[in-house]
Length: 247
Image (cartoon, rainbow, N blue to C red; front, top):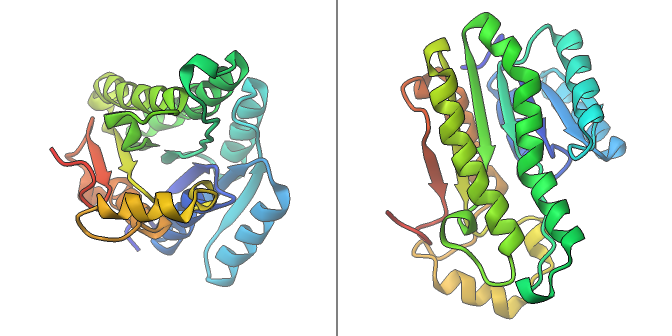
């Protein structure tokens, strides 16, 4: 139970990678504040964690709405007393070639994937500074590192998260707070389920390990970075991509 006594906040916790991260952190003993828009799914996850002997609470929050982020995180800190670990996982896609991309789709993706991380960090950093311990983990993407046609908005938002990670790592290192990113490759989630079988087969051909990743693969990396085992790692991007991108 390497995270016993710690409190983690996970955004986008209702499904996919966020759901797996919440379960992994709870299994290590952390109390988990679950943030997402879907109350029913959050309540189901709270029950699942409780049934396994863990502790979790749901906080319905649209991370694109600043006031909801402020009030939601304020409620989480009031409930748990602090936030030790922040996992900025909430993310969406609105794919289209740039020449045809609507400004609304650009803004929505950047606000959800990047600006939300800034908002959440701003709300939890006071708690971390006060206790001189913290872990900020941003879920970026291999496409933020190598780009992807038809995903200029998504790639830009995920590349921005990498820059934000490194800037924050420098800002708060003196207070024993680390800031790292996890960059998943092709992961089997609802976001990728809509892709054609042909596209998936082509993607797997480019993955040296020969398989699509699971949300649990990403959660394991997050769990490590949240622990004291990763105390001397900051400003780092941990690739979880099966070898799709190396170097």
